[in-house]
Image (cartoon, rainbow, N blue to C red; front, top):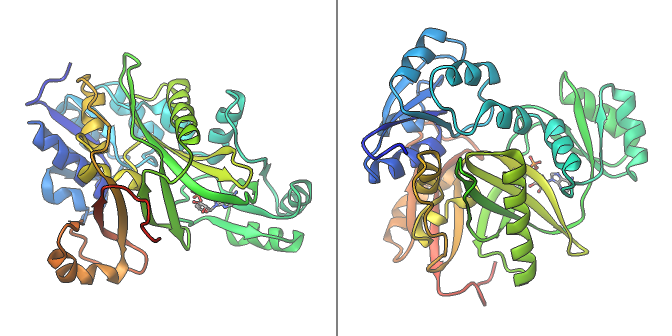
Length: 359
Ligand code: AMP
């Protein structure tokens, strides 16, 4: 067990790292954040090292200063993780990252373990995109296999010529073409797993996107209890199969037939888990600290229903109004530069139940 008082290393300096450091501080831990960007939001709340992922001397010094390393960003280069793992415990480990950094590896892993995913094809050349689209029924989403997030690196395609053009527009590298899923809604489950296999999950939530960026999370998801239980069981089974230590966010589609399909995995805190800070005894961030330090996992039963809205781009300028709103729980990430669609903060509102809440 890594007892309070120890220092936790966090790879990545975004808002997820910032909120992890704040939760760790509450439990008496210190954090040391490692990130390459000078204006990282997490730097304001923890000791930090600003260096590139291939700076071995900086990584070695970082490793020597912490009791365990976790991450808030899944695109940390695997060789940097392996280098750290030779010096200190890294949770989740490089093998988990190797799968979740690569959409194709992730889909293959899920499929090989019998988890439901949308039909898809690997696409190596523009002309393959056209034939794959025909095979998949004529409507698909072409995605880069690496470094895609918030809708970057993907394109909806409905005709073979469009698939070819999209392949070229997405830049170099292998792509994956997935069938366009006519979903009823999108949901996610954040699960925590300890090294001894203990699991704890937050309830399934619904996620509403706008231009591929998360707009709002509704907790709990307004779905039948049996389906919500199925989603939690699915997320836990994936976490176990992957052997993740820390958190695993599992994004799923609920299809129009009421089936679950896994869309994406993230082995870290997730935007769809932010509501847990204000509506659960233990937040996803504290749960991450508990999981990687071998502490008892916390109670994930919400004491309220919640709606979390992201503050995107210039919406953050509404902070004076939000702060004046009774019951609005405002979280600002301290990002200096406002860009359209950039996640600048979020606001969570609690309700006894979401029944009758218009959304
Ligand atoms: P992703 O980056 O894979 O999480 O995709 C971002 C968003 O694009 C998802 O949350 C969906 O709203 C949409 N999307 C991605 N893949 C598909 C798909 N195969 N069918 C329909 N919508 C999709």
